[in-house]
Picture 1: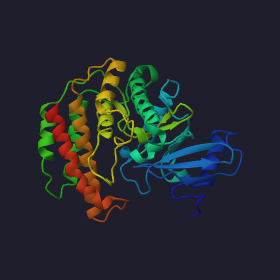
Picture 2: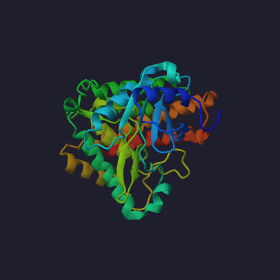
Picture 3: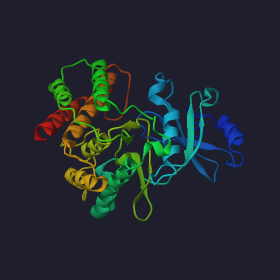
Length: 341
């Protein structure tokens, strides 16, 4: 397979589809490349030499259609595009598996940088780093201010019992990859279950909101697009805030294969992010410790799943040999967060 024809992307078939559905859009031969860094779905940058687009499709050999629902992702960005929430412009959704072997969608390419680590943020300097992270909070407030019914997303999820379902879902996920004793994880799960907060009014929830799922660019380092909507739904907006707080907290582990951006000079402290969200959204954030602890629990389960598959030889990746050591750290952070409240 040539670099211009990466696995999972048949550019000839894509060109035929685009010429039929969007005549005149493509003006030259297409070339494409896989964009590295995606956690689950495959993302490709495609160009005709003049314009650029992005193609999103499920991983090769995917089994769980519900886990890689292209229609949902396309639907949410199509609904949000006319609002002030920054998302790429959708081009088309294709559910005909004859074209690329799986459903996929095409959207416009947005220029910008996803900052994944403190080291990547460091060249921005303290002031720009601080502004970028605070802007992340403001953009989240903007997302949560969208009325789902007004943008056609009233039926995008089942908000009733959302937190209880989430907790059960991740406990089930944990049971599926249990092959060693993990001190404290059952206590963390049980405590989260006992102290389930009362959710505010439901909003569109991103589900994986953090700095490396947005593109930052332009003179003012503005957020040009929020990406990776595969976990989006209607639910409790404070789950997005809790995850953002978790990713803004120092892990206390040098050379960790999973990084937060907390150590970058100028990065605001988690408490400031929570205060800013509360002030700008008007929501009661007094239970944010629960949501943050839930984020630590969820990530512990995800990392344990990767560790489990790695030990079975079912997955490979940079740093996967050290992922198992991280899980107790995430559990400890979750328990400490709940104790401190």
